[in-house]
Image (cartoon, rainbow, N blue to C red; front, top):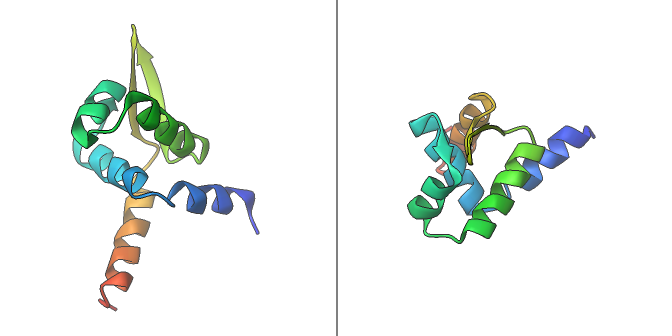
Length: 92
């Protein structure tokens, strides 16, 4: 099996990471501090989740001065998550 597929499925194995992906889809980009406030999760935890998502090439980052901003790598993952959600809800 393709190693990238394994990395992606492992990255999706946490509800906060899925929420981050949807949040970035809705808001185009976000700083780490904004995500900490949005999800009421510690900064180290958010950074760890973002690192996992970035290693799976689901998000990308850009540093602007002292702040790091994240956005979706592309929107394919949202389409995949939407199909998974439909399947889970029995919407075939």
